Picture 1 (tube, helix red, strand yellow):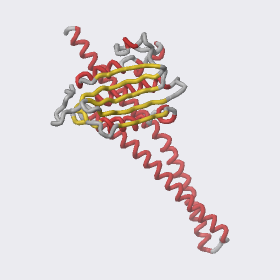
Picture 2 (cartoon, rainbow, N blue to C red):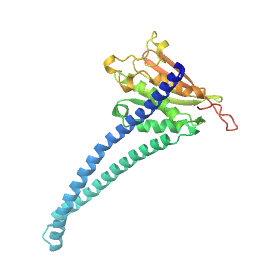
Picture 3 (tube, one colour):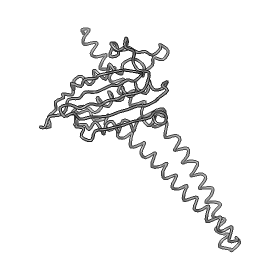
Length: 279
């Protein structure tokens, strides 16, 4: 087995590892976020169960005429509050239902291994919804999302574009963690012959002397003690390699502590065949 073939096998293995580790991190976050609503739901159910046991005794007293009008009014108020609790519980159940649907949608995309027409706006919306499992992203990052309604579709593997997009967004989130202004901007624009996805952040930026090496495999600015699965220096490298068969150009610019990453994507022609050949 020659060196080039060995390198290709290693690259394919790394791509699969990053693909599934990324999905795993997202699903782990979603499942973790289910714990809060489930605990709240359990407490509400126990409280209502206790309250209804007490209310049964009150109903007997009302039937026997043992309560005053004021006591009856208090009972009615408690019953009304119980209905408010039911509405709250219903909202919790709905949130859990939404989380489960997100997992199912993600798994459905991962299970489909064939090429298909992909609406990039929908893909971005779905991935950002999944990222709400990240509490830093959800609560601390200011988000500006502008998606061009005329954005055309691409033809390829959903997981390729999903993985490349998430790699860049994760890089932005890493940069924003220590930034005074935490803003993530994402936009799509259809230019006719091509489209682009642009992801920008107000993090620490990329130093000029580092820029020539950002697409090198295993190149990272993180300290050795911080280099784990998500800081191995493979995000940009793999994103570029994944999108190369589609003729997608990945352009990175950094200025004044702001970084902009742009996916330049050839559009489909009018016959519906692909100007990009996903591999």
